[in-house]
Length: 424
Image (tube, rainbow, N blue to C red; front, side, top):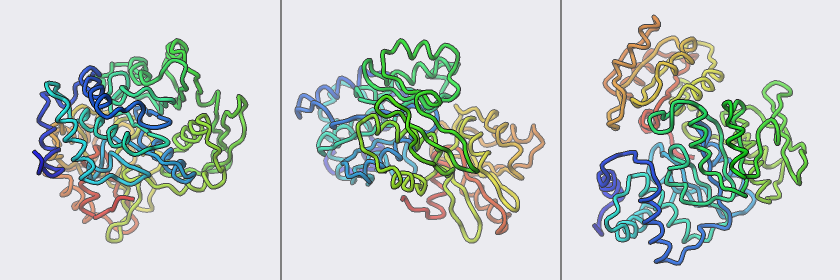
């Protein structure tokens, strides 16, 4: 046990619990209580922010992280899932922690869990919290993995809760309506604390649910606003000292302006005196790996995006333009609404190259994905791997064309590795 590498530890914890997803706080809370007791942990940072939502969670956390780093604060960030390396999930001041730091934390968790069976994600969450608790941080930023109310991250009572968006995803665990899913995600909010809502189209009756939470709530287009001005520019106004004030103009980039706005509003509430011009410049230049990330591979333009639900697919479709043809290289897990995803993107692509995901047991069958392409009379082919699908798309492309790799994190990660895209 003592000599295991990080990869060996990850293989070990993947097999320790009978279910990959098993929502609930009892197990993880039990072990976290033991860890806190042993090490005298009262709080993991001076200020804690949790971020939930169907889309935009990771982007919002990244925006928060970048602003805090720029202003000189020590910050720990927990992301889920990772794209290329597990270490990406746990960052200190924007830098992934070392294998050794993770291994040492895994050893402590394993020694203190006793009879408690933990899921892979629960192990990950406890590992991040343990590392953060040792690091004397000003801020900790926590991206919720799935839902909110029963997600392992919710053992932390955050000072600010952020809800980025509400879409139909993970219905098997969260409910079949946007209202039910929204209620689950709002489980990260705490009475008497601050709550930010970035969803512009909240389901009917959700406002009544939010009012019952007893939070200090800030809603987009009500308590802070993004209004379109000139082409590709949004004017951001934020609430400060109980008044809405102009903050500045945000350019349309691969990072959605709503996620930039949520980060700015959250840190204003937290009492950060934000340098406005520098912050806008910082966020407008921010590129996040796997989020409409633009790269060039051997003379051909490529976009990498982890869009794996209809809402994200719609946003991706809005930003796809090329002088030539646009090719899709894609695959998803079997719990995704592929039919609705294809609906959002059907008019965009000239051809679909569907690859079989081979490193995740929840991967959808590529031939079944192709059926929904074929039934719309769209051009598509299936390949044994996502790498083979990409290679065929590349062989078909010219310099004026665009290849769009999208779908599961695994799908995007495999192509990033193939074309040697490095972490920022």
